[in-house]
Length: 494
Image (cartoon, rainbow, N blue to C red):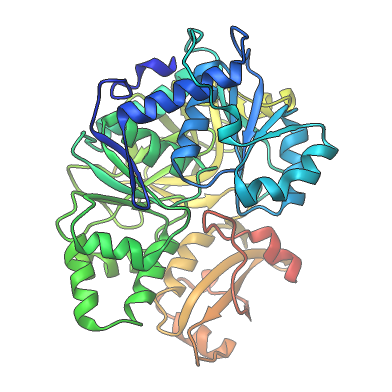
């Protein structure tokens, strides 16, 4: 994907590409900014030759300018999480041998000491921007384009390297599958160091010629006000966001809730992803807004791989079927294909959407592939042709008394309890069972719970061997920036 193939990013397109606060930017405006930034990065050289350039910028026109400018100049773009503590950034910067860092204002100030210590040049977007556009290099599709770091829920984050060809495949499969057009309008409030915000929303939106509304964070009053006025026809979020919206509804007048829900109702698409969507949440959202959430499955290394259909049945608790151009197959622990329904296996994926390598980590790259298939580490079953995720093989599959139990399935049932606000299930070592089921539970305000009461409630709702053997009540579950529970942190609580 040489940068030039974004069909709508050109100097003659006056359609609005981005809005940020009260400002709007046409595709022509954005294209000019990108070219000037790329020119400034090159600073007289012909090509950045895959120089690693990091940026610490929230969702904004400057973010888009920086990302695309690095691509057009032949560099590798490394977007960082602006919610990270500065001390956490050192691993990413040293791992990728970053030479330049782009940040503005308070974000730049916070990085001054770290960049000086690591001999990284620290620049603002304005510092880089050239007056005029010069000749830019032609970028071949096989070239490295982006490095995102894995969420690090199981070990130290690795740099996932995608080529321009990879990114092109990740975008175009979603354009086709989710029927993107230049008439679409979508808010972007998810973190933009993550595949969901970068590819599914921003890149698909710009590729399709849509309008993307940029928010530095999830601002419920501002975003719901736009929903009421009918600004958006597509909405993509993580389950935590849908939960937060419903919690917000509890704090405002019923008439206001109705207006917001009526704003969601005519949208052509609402999507949930990045973490499992509980069936209860799926049904609640449908009852409130009439929207049947489209759940999909993806990860940093593959973009999106599996999705419920845009047209057709969207099944609660399932992530659907392989996307166009993506091959997916379940394999057992002996690397044999699983062909029977409802028999668990690891999801493995092939296709142009799959990443190139883990940066400077040949061992990890080699270990993550088997016979050309990328091994996701996620376990699923095929249920009447639809994939249903059971969880991460290392964290969410609990081997207890000869059974393989899905922590996600148990969590989904527990979340239907009226007093439970959130929960996470893990396996803990047990002499009798190998592993036993342990539940960490966050209760709704003013509620209390005893283990025996929960055990009695579970009876008849799940098999006896799935019922938690112990519970721990906690104030809040530890989560990463995308709202995923970091289960290793729960193990530390024990």
